Image (tube, rainbow, N blue to C red; front, side, top):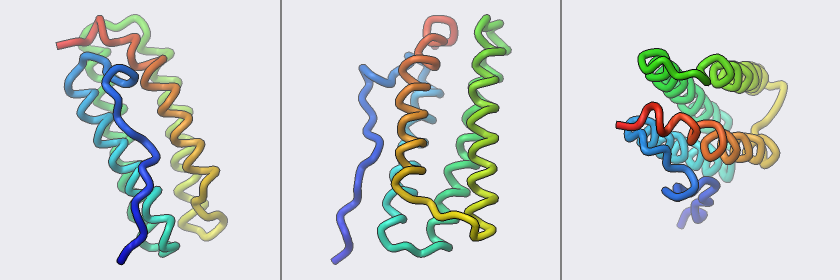
Length: 136
């Protein structure tokens, strides 16, 4: 019998919903991948953790590209500031990936807390602000 999964990120429409379906659906997928990475920490298998980490970072990149493209298409005023937020997280993510895969560091609770806190701030505070401009 395996260990129970630990849900680190739980989607709550009122908290995270932006009224932009494509973004909300991608955010839900991000939560699934964050939770999958968190779950993989329990067995400590570096290859498994690395696969989940890479999967999450790949999806973060694709999601940020989607958001930024939509903002460009709609002439969203907050695009530059939003892109800077994304770029800062991506630098952190790629550094984390490099350090994990080179064996310099492990992914642990503090890393997961950082990821959770970033999205807990970014989606309700930063992303929600584009809802009125980008909503369906």
